[in-house]
Amino acid sequence: MFQVADQTKKPLTMTIIGGVDKDGNADAQDRIEICRGEIIGIVGPTGSGKSTLIADIEQFAQGDTPSCRKILINGEPPDSQQRNDPRKKLVAQLSQNMHFLSDMSVCEFLRMHAKSRGKDPDLASRVIELANTLTGEPIDPGHHLTILSGGQSRALMTADIAVISDSPIVLIDEIENAGIKKQEALRLLAGEGKIVIVVTHDPMLALMASRRIVMKNGGMTKIISTSKQEHSVFKDIEKVDCWLTGLRETIRQGEVVA
Amino acid sequence: MKMVVVAGTPGSGKTSVLIHAVRDLLRAGQRPALVKIDCMWTEDDSRFKRLQVPVAVGLSRDMCPDHYAIYNVDEMLQWAKSEGADLLLCETAGLCLRCAPYPDKALAVCVIDVTCGPNSPLKVGPLLTTADAAVMTKGDLVSQAEREVFRERIIETNPKCRIIEANGLTGKGSSEISELIRSWPQISGEMLLRHNPPLAICTLCTGELRVSKERHHGMLRHLDGFMEYSGE
Image 1 (cartoon, helix red, strand yellow):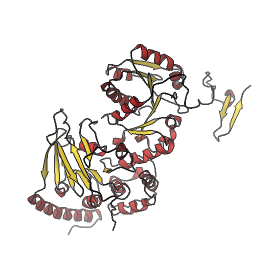
Image 2 (cartoon, each protein chain N blue to C red):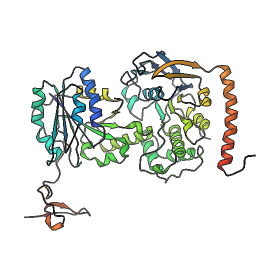
Image 3 (tube, helix red, strand yellow):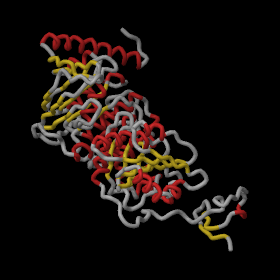
Image 4 (tube, rainbow over the protein chains, first blue to last red):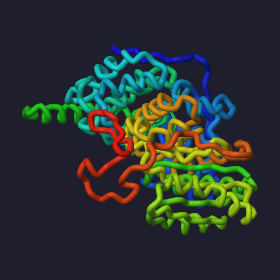
């Protein structure tokens, strides 16, 4: 229904140059190249440094964060406008923070966000329409942001990224924690020809990625490419997940499971 | 000598941001001295002292903290010089938000907390509108969209200022702040305040405790915005 427009079709590679783990030891993976159209997973136990890696990418770290990592775009350090100006920003991020703090209406907020990204404020209604395909309880443009549920907030943020932010690099932190349709959300965000980096504990999302970076004690310890065997496991999980989603919906609607 | 004035509402993260910036400045071979201005109480000097740089504290107590900071600029500069510093960093609260403690030749930095909501850039007044740089803190607590909306609000309020996203816990943004400080020119000659101070002295300043209207004189503003002069 919605086409996620891709800003530029130019080739884009992102390179992560390794830094150090929590004890100051060098990352075992000292250089990771990621191309357009790839979905990359970041996995590891809680506290292993997944969110730190995401933060390094979000701000295009140049050796100036605690991890000392560097992020290059097409082999070069990005300029400061690409790092900071939302109109030029290459990165859109769906963070773990599920609640809005702004005391504004949904519509007012989205219009303001579109303006900050140099986009048409009328995109706001498209964002709301799209968000409502991802979540159970519909969001009204007049609702105050602060009263939205976790699932509604996550759906709104997802739709906002797809429509307004529309950057070629998308970072997702723990999408499974929210009450929204996760594969649909991921597919929507992945769009066409984007680089998608997803932090996850969820086997299905991790195996949807072509490669996954394994984190331990703050360091990037290894990279696993999703094998054919893993891909067939993914197909099985998808079926199970589809069945579970159906059951969940049946129960939600107050019906009886047949 | 260079001078930097860092102002912002209480709890916005001024001290934490400064601590990271000072570490960066020290690595770059600068010799900073720090003055912390507060009203009633502070223990930030003990946090600053761990950085092994000269630290002084000024408590304004009964005096307006902005007036106190400005009144003592010469003294602070002399002290910094006597400590062998080439850079004076002055952290001050900026409490009533009607004026701003920025001399024109100093680098004026306003620290502002994004969790205060997108209307806060409109509320802080000259503290933000006359600043050279706005440092946004606590961005990790909100979504990217909210950070960008907040940034847009700052630009609406002060289109010329440089915006730096910083994190007082991780030190994000400190290298950008330190770079800005290093590129700032030296102070010279007579300095002027950037913003007009508020309407003269009020009756409360002179110690009036009685609440009723007829006890108050000077330039007064009514709830409906009507202004009048009462007195001799």
